[in-house]
Amino acid sequence: MSEGDAALTAAEELALARLAIDSGDLPHAAGHVAGALAQAPTLPEVHETLARLAAVDGSGGVDLFPLHHRAFVGTVVARAHLLAAAGRPAEGLDLLAAATGHSPGVDWAGVPWVTAPELAERLDPERTARILMQICAAVPDPAPRAGRAALGPYLTLARNAVTVHPDHALLLGAASALARRVGEAALAIRWASRGVRAQPSKLGEVWLGYAYRSAGRTREALAALGRAVAHDPDDLAVYADIAGTLADHGRLDEALTWTDRALARDPSFDCAVHTAHRLRYQRDGEVAHLVALADFVRDHPDDTHEHGDLAECCRGRPWLGQLTPAGGQLVDALRGTLHPTPAVLRLTVPEPPSALRAVAAARPELAVEVASAEPAGPDPWSPRRPVTRQLWQHDGGTVRPALPPPSEEAARRIRQVAQPAWPHPPAAYDAAVGLATLDLPDLLGLLVHPPEAPASALGRVLAGQDPSLWVRCVQVWACLGLLHHRTDEPWESSVRRQVLLDLLWGVEDWVTEAALFALVTAAWVDPAVRPDVARATAERLADVAVVARQRPVPIAVSLAHLALAAPELDPPTLGLAYRLLGTRPGRPGGRPVGLLRRIWRRLTRRPA
Image (cartoon, rainbow, N blue to C red):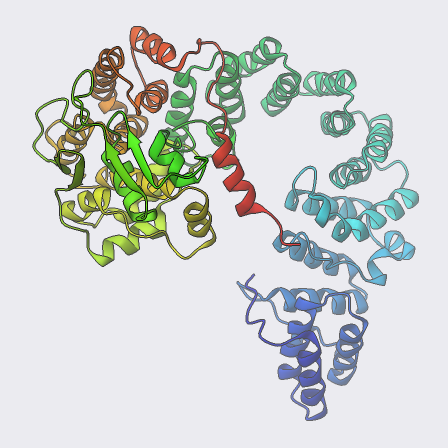
């Protein structure tokens, strides 16, 4: 369905519809009535005009609202009401359910004929059950509170139908599923229990188990789901449901016995595979489980069932689902957290060149001075290994880009894709494909000449909260764009690999982190490059550890998080990463950073 043009108000649409009826232009009138219904589906004046149009048409008006491949939702709803008026309410309910699937939060069914008790008497109970199941498939479980009122008419229909057909098992189960979604857990349990008593079945026990689970009655939920397995031991989706229920209550080992049982029957069953990898990651925090899940998703692109397990595990975790905010005096100055705000900021240790450039762009009034004494340990502004491409030039306490700015087209493209979070590394790789046609000079130029943030909600929040985050976003996505550069070249001899390794071993900078994230992402996407990326990650982290014994390394913590996100890293390097982070292995670490959490709250805050 497509929404069409909403330039006119419902009142204006009705006025034009009446004029068209008076002039005999009924198709034109029907279009305006459909437009009014789309905006005000329960407004009495809309239904009065629809009834007048149907009466003038002489044949009930149904044919004035034909259904095409992409029908306008107002047309669908108008046809539904006219079918009900013509004595075909089941067909009308089918269309209303389709409209609810299109826009679940809109009160499409809030009209008298849907909630009238006599409708349930006219409908076959199995048809009613199927309609309720169609509605349930269209809304989350539980439904958002703001959208539950729109489902109220369907719940009334369910009540009326259950009253007329008190022992119809399928109807009772479907009604229970709807009640559960709108927060009526006790009613859901009562209906599902009646359905199981009327006709014991696997599906009935599943509905009962879900109802108990919604009510927080875990023991009864597990018992019902266990009975469902006894009814049909080959339905492996129930095994995954039991595992998920156990895991929700911290019983991971028990949960994994159920996924193991399912996988023993079918190693490729998608629900069990997704659940098992998610639970194993929750148990021990090893990224290998998530990489294996990503491999499974890549190798099974035709799975019809949607899963969010990989994104759920990566959400909010450093580099798995978001970049890490930078630290240091310069970033504190950008965020306005230094009190009192100094006129001159004196650095005892040189900070990353990207930080200096970000401060110069966002806080030009702030003077930055670098201590004249030589810092302990290796010079942070010199490459850690000989490299072909230099991003920065420095002279004493100043640093400047060694590359020209990118083109306007490159700036436009990066504004379209750059953001501080992503579902998981393969999704970030896919999203960066829009940068594939940028030239190498443009991608490198973006790293040292990040354009201004876009004039969007995200751009405004990043610029207001922490301008350094936008700079880091640009660098991360420019490096992801490098992964799409000349992909026809074999990895070992490719330009993209050579450039990313140059960036990895260049000066200590935010670009180092962005380059390593791109390499780690390449390893997630392509198993063939994993040994090479693991080797580069281990060598870079070992170098950071050596330098960190002599002086602070601002990027050390972030590189340690990146190491924990890398596939096939050797145990000693993993241990080193944990030591740099000051944590121990065993559970997923790195929950959402407070600053990014606040930014997401601002972006998703509902207007008053």
